[in-house]
Image 1 (spheres, rainbow, N blue to C red):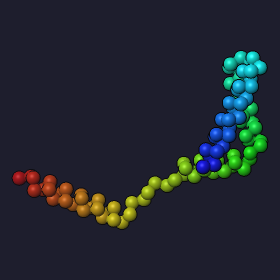
Image 2: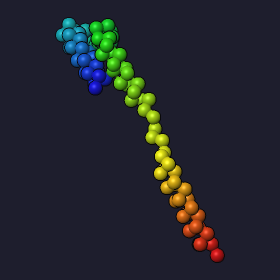
Image 3: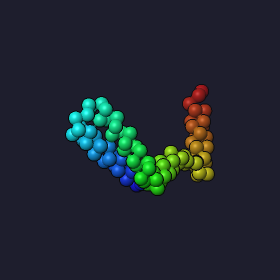
Length: 93
């Protein structure tokens, strides 16, 4: 949730700076570059706790461990392979 808050805050600042640059008749490309850089700097400097929490949320999302197979899953796989081998043996003459 902190990642969403931080992203929306950064995007809002970026839009505000971009519109301000357009209002001041700065070229479109320069307005976009200024908006991105200023939004990055302001959010990083003025909201450090939100920045840190958003980073932790993102790290937690990417560090999720894959589900380990349980003993039941392993037994099910063994039984399936056994049944498959029995069926193959019955098909051969």
